[in-house]
Image (cartoon, rainbow, N blue to C red; front, side, top):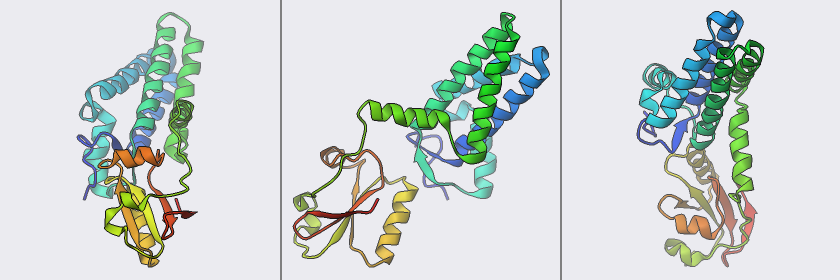
Amino acid sequence: MRTADPYTDTDVIDSRAPRFNQAVIGLLAFVAVMLGRVAWPVLALLALQLAVGLIFGRRYCLPCLAYFELVQPRFGEGPVEDSRPPRFANLVGVVVLGAASLFWALGFGTLGAVLGLLVAALALLAASTGLCVGCTAYRIGARLRGLRSRQIDRIDLGDLAEVSAHGGELVVEFTHPLCSDCRELEQRLRADGRLVVTVDVRERPDLARKYGVALVPTAVAVGPSGVVTTRLA
């Protein structure tokens, strides 16, 4: 069972899909560089394929189709994550692979090979370890643009009308309906006997802005007066 449709819920993605795509790109780029002049057009085709997927969607991305139609139905959906960092990583791949192809076409084979190997190395690193350099660059850029979490010191219980009269400690968790980590955290907290109140940031973006929630899940333990006693996630 899928929690996120791969072709319509494009703000999120199965975290295994980018790694599958990176494995395909990395292996093909490495083979193209090793074969040299006879195979450098493969780098151009890889850049074109990434660009087509970014512009027209996952239905037109061949590695994406292979994953969502062949691999995911067999092995199941992995954790769902924000799709923006891997999209940025793909954009970087388009630029570097395009530059590598251009250098090969102009006769600068050594420089083209260096750039091709760079893409292959970073893609295979991401596929094998989950360390995506392009994704990390996106997150750093987001922080530089001011998209950062703010410490929550107090929750106005009036924002949570259904529990405004509650007299004990509760947990307020900011979630997204397609966030796997959010569901796991909520289940774990409820299993521990905690009273959990969820705030869907897609339905209540005003509360996400008010409390500076940039990432989900964000969860805090709140006392009867609304003062945050512990940050849980």
